[in-house]
Length: 215
Image (cartoon, rainbow, N blue to C red; front, side, top):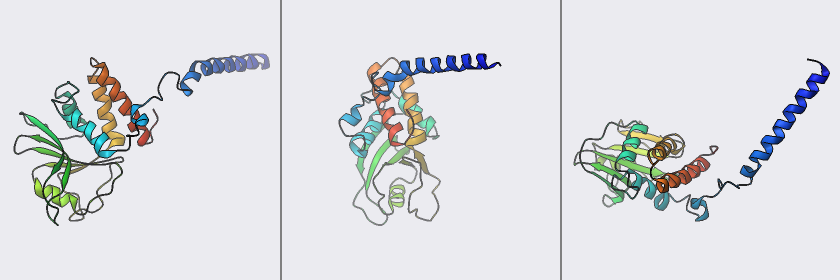
């Protein structure tokens, strides 16, 4: 390529870059609204119980305010790689007390998804708060046949396991991977429910920020 052709090519690339800059400049200033997030404006994005647990509880509930039936729950089971839930009525509860705390029993369960008398998912939701002593043993002693999900930002293991090893029915899952993927799938399922879909988009942006992922 001659010097003149090289100069012409460089000028063309520069002009193209300037056009792209003009197109995307509004995005950097938030003109398209991508910086608008109700969770941030209300100052509740960091609250485990009243924000994250409450939102998860409603989404997992087939009778939740989202009005989408059990589709979000089924997506959750798939993304979290859980065994299929049995047929029957599902009851979702939060902040479930299981008695006075002792060395082997008691405490409070963040989320419980009950499917009949013999099958349940217990979710310990821990974004920022510290762990209680011997909580794994106490929760599994309460419901030996349940699956206990330890849900954290990065999917880490509990700090103190009862025998030093992870029980087979204790699963460690993360917001960074599993919950974000679940919310993305829920958003696709809510294509005909614009209020739900846009709320999920807001929540997805919040999760991407607190897990330090790009929007």
